[in-house]
Length: 95
Image (cartoon, rainbow, N blue to C red):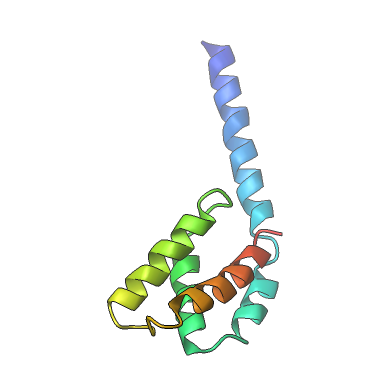
């Protein structure tokens, strides 16, 4: 039983370490986002607020951009383009 506790503790520390390292370049991501248009900034803010992982990033970008477009908060016509550009900025936070 103690062995399983040690393994669980080690796994938890690895996850925490990975999460911290994955967010190491948030200033670069924020700098990139500052250059986006208003709709791109809205997508970026929504995606960052959703706290995606590298595994969920694409689906989170799609979900957030779609939601903003359907709610009329960003232009539907340029939602894909803005989501792509915002996604590139968010990716910088994972490098």
